[in-house]
Each structure stands twice: as structure tokens, then as C-alpha cells.
Amino acid sequence: QAQLVESGGGLVQAGDSLTLSCAASGGTLSTVAAGWFRQAPGKEREFVASINWSGHSTYYSDSAKGRFTVSRDNAKNTVYLTMNTLKPEDTAVYYCVTSGTGGTSFTDIVQAPPRNLNWGQGTQVTVSS
Image (cartoon, rainbow, N blue to C red; front, side):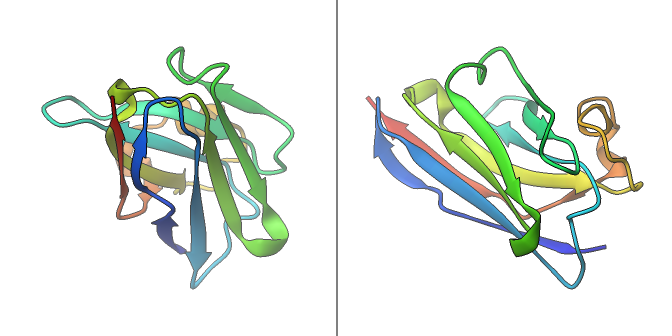
């Protein structure tokens, strides 16, 4: 499986925008579904967004809907998460995932048990008020 490396996290102010990138090395992510999860301090990990293999279908959590956009550039072997109008409650470690079972639909991210996903190491996003 490809190794996933997230980047783009950092410290921003409420209302700012940030784009996270997830690059795959040692393999390709262009043929499988991908997505993003996050985990805030003291909270359980939660789903944020997913995208099918071609980029034509996406799915979002209620908290991400309308503010976040997941996209991909298969030629660059990279998935993105653009986050607008950030809030302090968006503060978390953000993890990029791909389907570890060859799934191509965004549902293969949303419904998959964690063990069936390929995880990146995470990138910290901190939003100050």
C-alpha cells in the first residue's frame, strides 16, 4: 500500500482558510477512494469527508458540509482538503485515508472499519478564537 503523508496543517485564526494535502508515495492512490478523518483532544476520531476514485463524487460530515471541500489530483497522486471559515472547534489532528481494500466509492471510506483503511500520520490544525 502507498504511504500517505499529510501536510499543510498549522495555526490559523477563526474565519481563516487552510488547505491540507495528502501525497502518496511508494504506490498510487489514483484508483481507490480517499478521505479525511480528524481527532480533537479528548474526543473520538470522526469522519470529515470522502471522495471516490475519480473525484466525481464526494461526501461530507454535517460539520464539514458547506465549509470544507475534498478534491484530488490523480496525476499528482494527491488528495486535498480545503477548509474555509475555520472555527476553534475544527482544531484537531487531521488524517488522510485511502481504502485499504481497493474500494472506489466514497462509501468505502465512510462505512469501512478503521482496519480496512490506509492511514497517514496526521497533521495538526489549530484554530484560535
